[in-house]
Image (cartoon, rainbow, N blue to C red; front, side, top):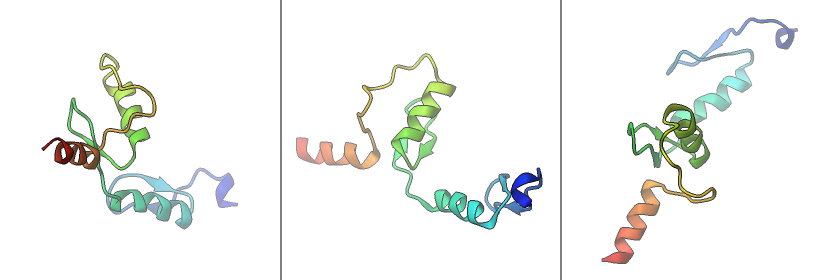
Length: 86
């Protein structure tokens, strides 16, 4: 019945999001604990997934050109590249 209602009794303790089920909340809360290695070059907001960063840039900074699709530019990737170039 809960899935058919508009009620969302399960609230995240770290952000204002609310969910209909404890399971959905648990999935969401895992995102808060993930390492955020993808950083926006414009506003420096960080993301756990390359796809999340790309979506953010497309929506929040539409004038910024993204690298080719499939290109992964994470903090760790940049550190590995810098280490190889030394």
